[in-house]
Length: 615
Image 1 (cartoon, helix red, strand yellow):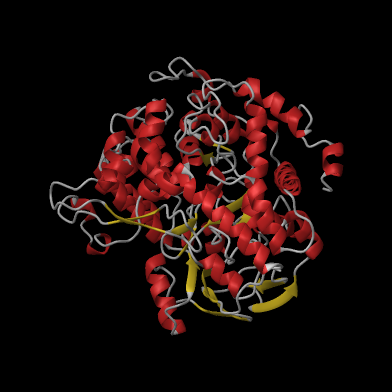
Image 2 (tube, helix red, strand yellow):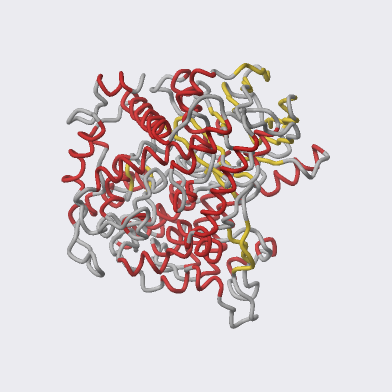
């Protein structure tokens, strides 16, 4: 079975590492990763806990397919209460760390308490030990990973760590693994930093067993073929990565621009996937060097980029001129269209900054965009910013403020609190493009109606990866729906939310859902684990996870009033493009959504729903 049945409990206060058996009854109901870790978390933590206190817990979790031969089986999650939002936080990452943790024999690691000083957790199969990390404190993610390899004397270890942003409690700090893969959203890195936990190093050689190897290989082979034959997973993502979307979404009229004052960006063609692949005039080289893949991934959507060392003076640090990751769509949008910056080199630089210091580029770029609007209307001045002219379109200002934020310096300290807190401080909370205090991603709800309901109801705050209705509304997957109408979107959002929760719990990448359905995933789970696992079972597990997260949030103090969007999206119509004249029709969709969910008109899961889902 691909559950290892082992949980590692790390008490940072006492300095102890203890193994305990997995709760298999919970595993059958929540599967793994996002689902099972959330169940553990809500059972052990008070919903009212201060996210940055020692009483909060932090869970690293794998899924039953993580580390196996299943396609995209490198996924793992970080579950905690998010300091940016105060809501349940589950941040998903790829790369190789998750598979290494699983192959070391662990389903999850639960961190509790707070260390008296900086430490890192060293895992070698069934051996786990907390070690001093004082020399690494204050270092970047990249330096930390190099130092860990030297300290462990093993270049084959995999690492997950925080940079200076997590140490200084930037509220959107992430946990970075493999130097450029991120559990990036909701501030999970700030929670890690609050515990003085700098990193986790892992070496796993025990392997992962599945229940029926022959049936499993047949199921995974069929899924790999489907992924290869699909135009999105077999061609679009390998060639251009997620950046294939930049021009598509811009033409759709749903690219949030200048802090969502506009829905189209004149500079989109200069920062998209096609631009990354074009040779530069200066040296004949392209920004894009190659694609790359996470563990077990046949899609290979990662980007590997190289900056032009002669072009951008602010980015004149030699360490940024090599092949160190590359822009993906959400980062390029947030750092680019949202701020009005159309300099590809500047965006690549800032993306490196996010990887090195450990920050979420979505929240960072969106918060900088809000600051630029504050600066434009005179709500903040040079006296506030230390002389930095935060003007829309300024590549130099963007790069400098990103550096300041990662290091916790200057006006970067204000940016590091996220846009809701920053705009409230300067008297204009309406300029924060957030839901539940989390900045929303690269799809304007006026141009893609389903995404408005997705953002409003997302349990971890505004998020596209909790219900990617863009697949249906723009790409026609699994069937085409009209992005400009709200009709039928409540059911679409609910279906995507439940299915996504199941994909996450299994331990595979949500990008596979461009081609695979739960009918394709179920045979892999069935061959992997004991028992009978159908697509219907997986949908029920997804629904159970969604309602458990909702229940926790309501006990933490959230209400239906938090299921809303910024007033700008509800009242100010799109100015250009196919959505011209449209606002988000959230008010029409939300009551229908509550009813379909089996919730009261106040958005509370009914007793009947809770009973049916055994909650």
